[in-house]
Image (tube, rainbow, N blue to C red):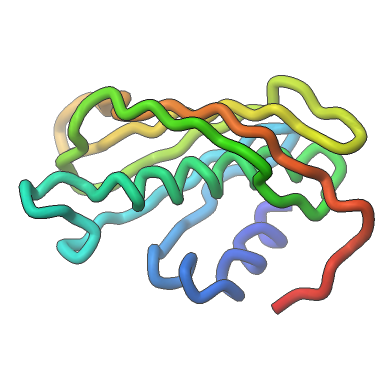
Length: 139
């Protein structure tokens, strides 16, 4: 499962630019690491909210696809930024709350990490992940 998700991610230019690294996937849960670069920061030096949101979106979609290996797309998500993110990397942990035939409900927590410090929760997300009715062509 993890190899499939990492392969799908590597086939997408945006995900390649972000540098997402899937660490674990299965049974409705995933963990993804995002090493941070200067071009991912806004003018105050914090991680740009778009990068945090994209990571949350990807983590929720991945988690929603692990229950049956389905192809999925995000149909809706809400993100709450809890603190400015300044650090070395982001870590997303997502878990499926409920998985139906056509929609999975997934929650994610995004942590900012620095060497020698405890990870700090910087954002949470709740997503509706639509299960596609049939396999779609790959990019």
